[in-house]
Image (cartoon, rainbow, N blue to C red; front, side, top):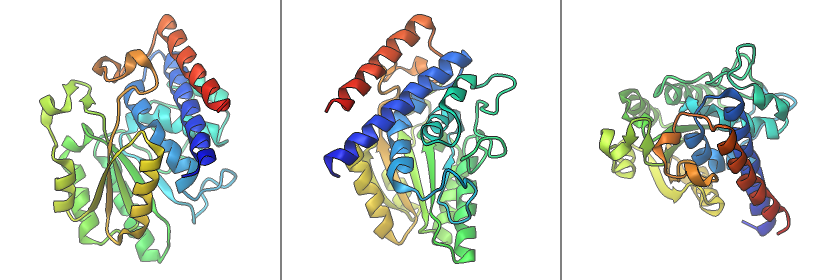
Length: 280
């Protein structure tokens, strides 16, 4: 990846993180930790990988993204807003009673959202259905879906993985955000899914394990997906809360919003990061 492309993606990801903080602070609720850990992967998808048209969000030829860990909606909303699907200012209406930006993605109200999600384990099943449908239609559409490492404790996820292998869904890319934490604590203490990479291979996937907060490694993973010929899994090791110092690797920030003082600290850190990137 050249320096300019990396810089563009880093700036986009920093803006996504700002949107996550703005929206969860304004809502006084939400899930910042897992949204921040996934910000780089989502930035890569919308900044470089997927085919879509902001002016025609339902274009039949577009690639699809299913946020299976739907509680990370602030990251998806922020990514879409900064690409022009809807006004960035609307991020401040997250979870408000009259807002179209509710706590989990709704494909019927939010431009750019391809599937309504929230019940963990179900999004990947929908993604498999989309991938199978594209195959039946002879379409070259690709389907990307993002799960959490806590989410894959759900049995439905593994039923979906079996389906993907059974029907040869080489147009399906499953990303697993392995930040090591879920609402009740460390994933290894609650219900370890490790070794995730070996299990995904046993379920018929080609697999790569990467640093999911590194754009060069993300690029390599998606290039491998393009060449695979099998259902593909990217096991992404990430840092929960990345970008906000006091949220990093802190389970408390799975599902709560920053207060006014915490908000000011987060915004300053992220704006400082943006300024640093913009002068490089």
